[in-house]
Length: 282
Image (cartoon, rainbow, N blue to C red):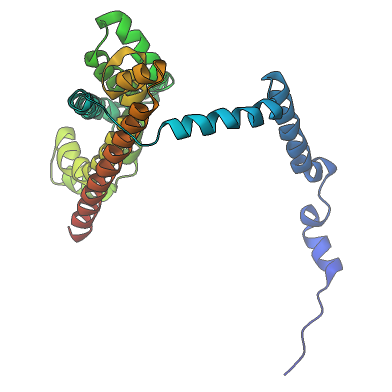
């Protein structure tokens, strides 16, 4: 048994000069990025008037508010809060479903394996980017001015915001589909619609269903936030109680939201696993 061979460093250096003799710009790139990121952080803290003393002084106020929240108590408003929670869940469910239904056909136009022409695909993708680039809260403010206060504006805000996100996610799922099924349908004389209906959609629908279920859970929180600006739901009740300093009611509303989100997460998780399991068996 021979011992370990000596490494010929000179031969390795001659064979891989880029590894051993990296230019100074490459060696200094990572330290420079770290220094630049730290400088931006410090500048941001100074520019935003971040004050540790104010933060420490505010902790006592936070402690006082936390004590005022105990115990959670809805008072005589429990029926109103339950109705508002149902309204929030309806906003999330309807807005997400509407966005998914509208985004599916548009996502086909944004997928390169369905529309090979970049000239046709480019404007669709940029349209989805522009829709997705505006936050749900901004869309809520826009629709409140268009259709007025209430849950209808909330449904439209979530639908428009998720339309852009679903369009991107669905198109990526379609592009990642296996082309063997599509080629088999094409070889058997199927049309382009047959390729989409029987070759692509059966593969991507389980993925799409999982994404929609996740967005329903996420949009329950979004529906709460947009309710604060007047789009209805439990967020409106939460904003009103914070405004009048009814901290026990505020804590009860927060608990309701947490329980609702946890329940939706549990149900959607079970459904996602069932869909994935069925897809794996198929």
